[in-house]
Amino acid sequence: MSGGFVLADDGLGRRRGGFPHLDAPGLVHAVTTRDGPDLGDEPSHHPAHAAPAGALAVALGLDGAAWAFQVHGDAVLHADAPGYAGPGDALWSDRPGLGVMARSADCPLVLVAGERPDGSAVWGVAHASWRSTVQRITVRLLAALAQSGADPARLRAGIAPSAGPCCYEVGEEVRDRALKELGPGAAAFFREREGALHFDLWAANRDQLREAGLRDGAIVTAGLCSLCRNDLFFSYRREGAAAGRYAAVIGAVRSGQVAG
Ligand SMILES: [Zn+2]
Image: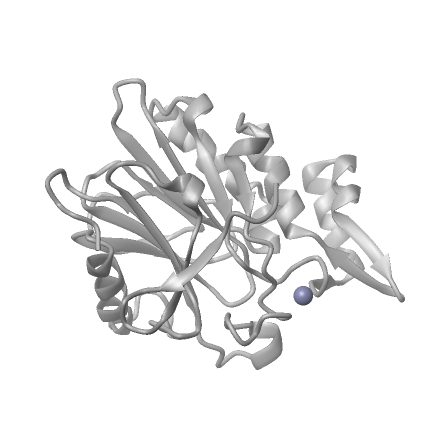
């Protein structure tokens, strides 16, 4: 399923994106654009992250947000306090008031929300770079949510804007690694055009969401490419190492709080 990603003014004149199908009572999320806040290119444990991350969380009605040092690996962390949570590429939480946040300039960020049979919410985010994708970071995040009691039939996911299959050119070694780690079916995620190899990270992560038990209708791909739409999103490939970082954050407000 494509589309279903909406850009709107955040009230401060900045465009901010969201997936309407993720909305549920008390649950809030956002994908920022290059309008800000810019999460910056400092290492994730740098204190400079605390202010923009905290401001973004509070703007959504959350008490705070937790984030990881994204290392292009396979570690899934449980967050139970705001701030730096350690090295990892996926974070989840079930603590009311706490958001989980990931940042990117080209890599897909996968937002996930769900509920347990008792109605309590669980939520998470994965930084699905190609290296983390071939290490099945999205499947691992969903497995952590399932282990926490989330009902697979009520899980929903949105794949945020990132380098798209139109532009995400990779070397042959990336396809080799994907085939080795994900199996021969991964060949379907690659296309050769005019002598260049392109990796469809959106399709690869949709596949992992389906493998984790999500229905097709519960999976929405924003379908916006950060290279084609560099006017909206930071792109490492377009702008280099000094590119800013956009963010995806998701959480549930404490009961009684009103989301902004
Ligand atoms: Zn593109």
